[in-house]
Image (cartoon, rainbow, N blue to C red; front, top):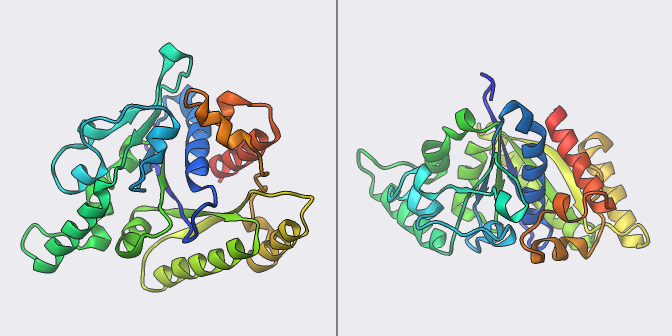
Length: 273
């Protein structure tokens, strides 16, 4: 990459089932394709203990994962996984994954205990990601963090590492309510000095035929402004089918489909910003 520092995006929403992992994988793959000619690199940090990123891409995790890295049990090189599967027909030479597992929940508790006890080498929980992973800006053009619905003690840690948040919103009533709450959290973080902004609101599971979907989209535009709301991602079975077919992304499975074009719009938006 160039001398310019890489950018870090958190895909976050307090509500589950809104398409965060799909968005993280698709955005990261799209950005990797954009920067490949310039030898750019993209990283996905799987911050969800369910570890769905590696599973969705049909990748084999290594012995160590994010929890081990945070607890000083390994180096970054020990746990990062290449998403390149050229031998299977999926060439992604510049896309990398930092995997997670259910051990992340235990790591969180251990880190909180260490921070409470204190000591010369202790790091506050809200600073742990910036402390352990701040270097990714020098290694990768883009880093995309796939966040779980509940960040609790790690919320500020994610916001301290990320430059911007992309907030997927399922276009139903509960999706809209959850988004207002989550963006309020980000605004609160800004108020006490955390430098993160909202890159965009991303409507997901959008069905033009449904009155509620159109109403929620209109409400999002009214609340956040038209320029802050990205092209809606349509509801489609393609999103379930793609990873089930040998761990493909939607750009590999059906690159000319309407859902793929909608996500390409998000990729282009982030790349141009």
